[in-house]
Length: 289
Image: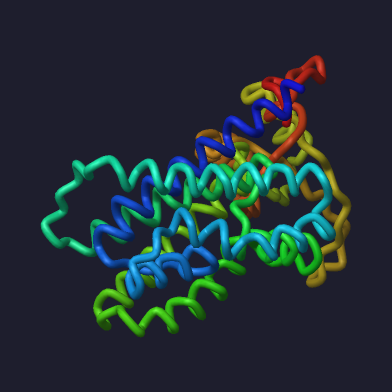
């Protein structure tokens, strides 16, 4: 019960942020959007139809797809997300804007992308959608492995092309900036809070290096077996995941023992396990959803 309450709370926060960005930056500065939201803005700018109403009307048939393909819980979260989005859209339209950007469309696009993207990212991260293309994006993630940001960029671009019916060329260009920023923020929120760095180390002094990493940094590591293609000699490869703020210290620790060690460092996302989401007693550092 507490889990569902937490998810609903963050879905509501996400739709509130999304509505805030759409009303005060997109609608106020004639910026389009993609998916169903883009269609609601298209109807607003062309026919003055309230997006709070058109959002519900367009999403009704898509609810049935969501019920059949996403399951009961996600469907309920989608209903909550869609209904709350319309409520917040209507609410923020009744509250005068305090943001005066003096016609600066770049600022409007950047703030809209950051706020709407963060809002949608929260909705997705806590198991919900806001209907429309959100349902299609989640299905593409589940069945094709496409990132949600990538799917949105494709759908958004198609709707924006149609939106050229009312957009000036420079407004369309700033809209693309908004869409790009929103897609990146969505993926950033989706990828998780536990982003880190993964390092591979090849050295002749592997035992000393692994011991130093454990002793000085408190990080465990895994030794893999490999073979050099040039010499044919067997090699030990050390694999270790560290927090981003530890990578300089890790590199210095390795090179202090073996300045000639071969070292590669890569980004990793959504890290789970001891030292990141679990303590040394294998207990969660924070509540898991």
